[in-house]
View 1 (tube, rainbow, N blue to C red):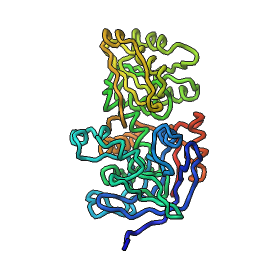
View 2: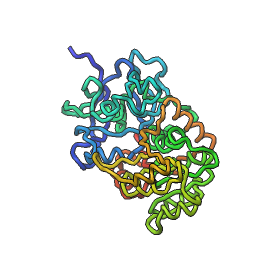
View 3: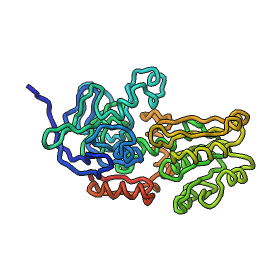
Length: 374
C-alpha cells in the first residue's frame, strides 16, 4: 500500500520543444531522507531554462524547469540536520557530496553533475511531480525544479540565508549571479589594481562587473552591443564601455589597457566573441568561459598567440562556488550596499512567465524573477 503523502502544487510545465510554459495543477511528494520541501517565494529565470525548453540540452519532456529558487522551508526529511521549517533558503545546483570533486571542495564539478541537474529525475530515476492525470512530470532540474509553488531540494543545495535580506530577490544568487561573481572571485581570482573585461553585458557579465569592483580591479571594461546595458555597466562600476558593434573590441581594449587585459570573462556563448576575448588578453592573461552554446559548438584561437603569450583559457561552472559558503557572502555584500545585483532584476507574476522569457530573449530584461508566493 502506498502511504506517501502528497502536496498540491501549481507548476509551469514545458511539454514540448520550444513550447510555451503552461501553468498546471499538479502534486509533489513529501520529502524523504535529506530532502527539504520549499515553498517558493520567487525564482529567477536563466538562459539555461530557455535552452532546455528548446532542447539544446536533452532534458526529457514534459518537465518542470526553474533553477534559481528562493523560498521558505515547508517540510524536511528525517535525515535533515541543519535546516528547520520556516528557514529562508536559496536553492542552488545539485551535487552528490561524496565524489572526489565534491570531497575536494569543487562541488560544481561533481562527477554526477549532469545526472543530478539535467536527467529529469532523482538519483534513483524517479520523479517527485505528477500532473492532474497522474502522469509523470520530469523534475529535479538542478535538484529543484523551482518553476512551481513547491519544490524539493536536498539539504546540501538548499542554502540558509539571513531573514534580513529580501527573499524574493535572492533566487538568482543560486546560479546566474553566483556564476558571474564567482568566476571573478573564485576562479580567475581577479586582483586589486588589475584590469578586467566582461565580454557580454547580460546578468552574468554585469554580475562579474560588480564582483570585479569588489575584488579591487581598477580598470573594468564592459563589452556588449546594447547601449542600455553598457550605460548600466558604467553605473555599476565599469570604468569603460565598448560597443563591439561600433568598434573593434580587441583594439579598443588594447588601447585602454596599453597592451591587453589581465583578466576576462566570456558569457555570450558565441565562438567569435570567445576569440576576441582571447586576443584581448595581455601576456599571461587569463580568460574564463561561462557562456553556454548548443552542445557540439567549437571555437578556435591562434595557438602561438596562446603559447607565446602564456595566456590561459578555462571553463567555469557555477563560478567555482561552494553555495553554502559563497551565497551567504554575496547576501552580506548586498546588505552592505557593495553588491547591488538588484539593479539587474525585473519582477514578473507567475502567470506572466512566458512574457518574462520573451523579454529575456529579446534582451529587454537582464534577469527576470518570477514571483510565485507573496
